[in-house]
Image (cartoon, rainbow, N blue to C red; front, side, top):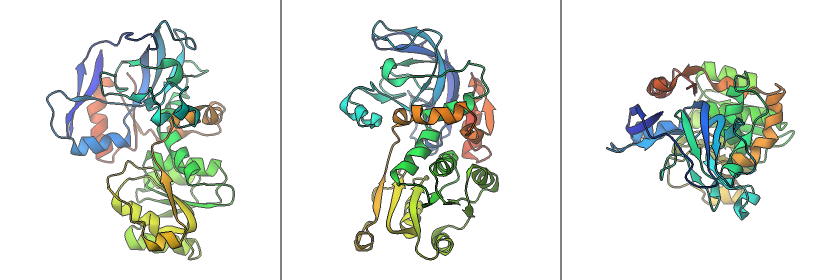
Length: 344
């Protein structure tokens, strides 16, 4: 089959790789119907050291079950399913606590002989615990929005939940990428009264306004902090979703959060420490967040997509085939695409 392999910064190739097959009784083989390029894929695309072996790419996909292992009880061949961005058994103690990213029997797509999602098919370990059946046909117009349940929409929702957004609260989302825009949508869904989106790409912030942002702040650094505090009467914001992962944006988050407020670290962290000194302690600032346990959220978020209430699939602005995946990476890295949908 054809699949994406990254060999170093800026070097993504589509190559022939072995077809997936059942290796363990808990496996399933899924033919990929839709996948995508994630913003987090851009970090290795910018920084990865050159490698002769390369690494399989992609952790967001939905598709049709083609084969199942003898221990798989909850799936049948022909089921349309979505896969969270990590695989898990959904039965261990961490999974029962809603922390599927720490599953004792789980793992990530790509490493250790596991297929990546940016290809024509995937062997899915722990298939019963990982895959969620979707009650639509594989040609449904809802597929782009349903695909966001694998990562980006669930991740935005995780940032809002962990930052304790509730009706009447104020929230600032830092970052106008797909995760940040999905966090805006999630904040609106949970009843936030004021939703400030910090971003400077108008096509993206316009989509953010359509998703529920009440204000847009294009300024960065100290100017951005001052502008958010001005919009909140000087006190700062109840909840901050930091959806970039850079040191500067984390500094901004701590600069705009009000006393007693919460900062959720959602962007893949490109920094080693958070400056939580005396002022943060005296202000009772909470810093939380992390990798979203998408599997814990899918059933909750699915109905609003199925009935058309929410359309997170609008974050996809470009579509490519399997052979166009390298072009998709370039488009996202150049910021000519917000998020690229892959249709094998």
